[in-house]
Length: 209
Image 1 (cartoon, one colour):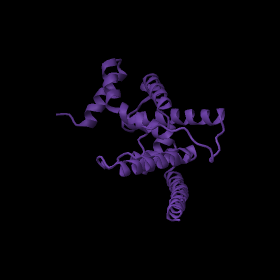
Image 2 (cartoon, rainbow, N blue to C red; image 1 turned 30 degrees about the vertical axis):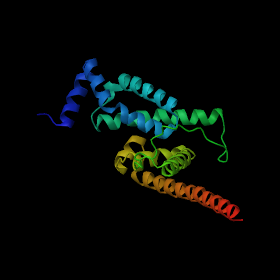
Image 3 (spheres, helix red, strand yellow; image 1 turned 180 degrees about the horizontal axis):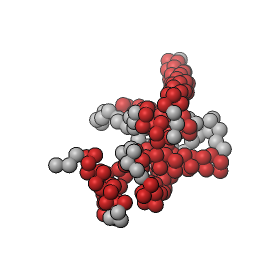
């Protein structure tokens, strides 16, 4: 019985030989994960869908250049990351957005990846939605070069070495950007929660008067 890696290697070889069905099988194994990476980088479902389509087209045209030095999925994600960053930079160039302005978000964003099921408690459900929105907006406001490292390492759980390979960076550079990303996220989240706490205290004081 073939292992997953052996099966992938066989499918890649068949796809490179012109077997379209093998290529489609490879894509079906990776598509939802590649889309999630694209969504977490772009923060926009339509852009993520465009990135996925561009990734598939690029993978098809560049398939002959894949040498098997990494997993096919890793190679595919690297293509998706490049396409997602193009989208983000193009969008930034078209409309410069201040950090103080509202940022477009997708209510179906996958940040955070897993949310506790709080049943039918409306207060907890509201708190969950509010927290998810804060996390999503904070991540989207992070500079692209830091956001992509954070997404690959802390959201998708790729190793530092895999992340470095995908981005064409050194391992120390990945570690440096990840640290800066975490610090910036922490700083911005602290500001959000502090603002929310102050607002709650003010409302409580007003109601007590």
